[in-house]
Image 1 (tube, helix red, strand yellow):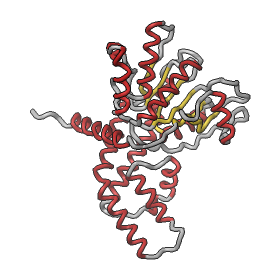
Image 2 (image 1 turned 135 degrees about the horizontal axis):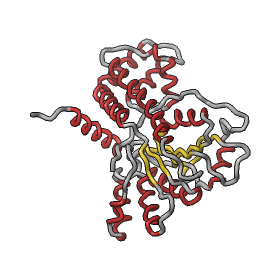
Image 3 (image 1 turned 120 degrees about the horizontal axis):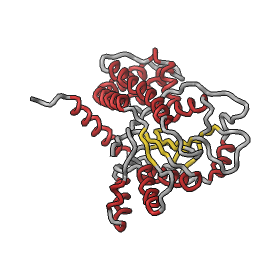
Image 4 (image 1 turned 180 degrees about the vertical axis):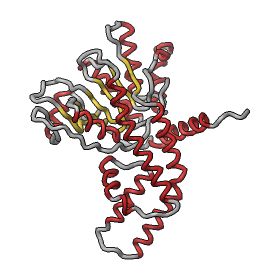
Length: 336
């Protein structure tokens, strides 16, 4: 499988919110709940968190695109994503699912060589260990069904990644990790100095330090990153902090470019039908992608899988570092 671990990154909001009297924009919570009910999505599986739909709505109808926010390598979330894709396939005829972290179409036929009696156990284990994603799990189940009754247009998984951008983003990640500890130590020292000065509350510098720390940990939301950029001039400067902050900003810049590349790659695939296309991406990419879809007048629904814990974050970090190590080896010429 040509499939790499996606990056936990924040794409900037592009601010291209298309206007138009025929479209709903900024739906209220009650409206989103009504939409969720009409789509038949159980709240213990996912929640509709954003939408942009024609008016009047077609009861039970589906939008052009369904964006599913991914919590990478999280077994519970991957199971929810698989459930949502199966729902899309059976209820709306979804045939194409596009993935962050993948570069080509995915061939999962190897699973059909595994005896039926052990296949389910194998897939459950792979999902738990972070080695099989929700879309892949759904694809195996769907293809098993399609092999028994071949359709005119088969179900397919496609990658949306630009290989060059992905490689650069992984290298940027490695650059942040290499500088992060020293930079965070300086943030601690700056906080102590600030506390000793007894500055009046609220203190804008304190809020910006919170953002800088989250920036270095690559955990800023899109809105938080926007706020960080607006107050960028207030970021303290130290020999250790400056290069780490620069590396993190480069990481986020590349993330934004990857968000645009996702839609570009997705548009290259001609729809097999009028059924919606599903895009599975990290939540931080969703903001930029939905802004562009709005601007272009495409209807969409954003689904956020229900999560009960984040205890599997170390699995993601381990896979991310493994990818960085592999790329580092590939970029170093072999000794002669």
